[in-house]
Amino acid sequence: MTDTPKKKTSFSQLITEMAISIILPTLILKKLSGDDELGATMALILALSLPLGYGIYQFVKDKKVGFVPALGFISILLTGSIGLLELDAKYIAIKEALIPLVIGIATIISIKTPYPLVRTFIYNDMVLQVGKVDEALEGQHSRDAFDSTLVKATYMLASSFFLSATLNYALAKFIVTAQAGTAEFNDQLGTMNLLSYPVIVLPCMVIMIGTMIYLFKQIEKLTGLKFEQILNEQ
Image (cartoon, rainbow, N blue to C red; front, side):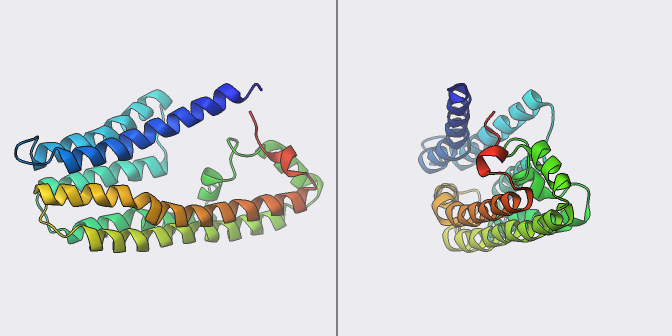
């Protein structure tokens, strides 16, 4: 029962992030972009300022910035630049594909570094008792086999980002067709933002969950530990 408050906090934080990053910006873009409301430019600025401000708040609170949040920050700035500079709508599709594509490529490249991104996304102290797993791997002399497992998991993880890049591009290309700087453009941007979760996030989550299951099963096999023993419930 001791972990109940933390679970409630995590759920509350998830709801807050969804409200600030998705729901409120979408409502602003779709409902307040008309000339008789805020107008296209001010509505776009307000909608983007919410996730941007929340990201800055999280950075100040945690005193650190990660690779993925940094890309999210850049993504918001690029969207704002495209809208405010009234660039061709095709750049939204390019931007939407570029962010997950960069993450996917970086995930693969990170295999050759001391800090593979699979450890950031899955194999970390928030999810698993990494210290116990590492100790068990050494005891079972299965470190090399586990390193090979991490490589396979990395490619599986990267595939979810490549799928996201493809779906992002297709969704943006299909939906965002209006001239930037108009109320119609903002409305389409809000629609894309709203549809991105069922259309893009859910398929990618399936791959992510599959990667986690594969990694957990391999850890059990290589360490002799049960899932309940490696899961971090703190």
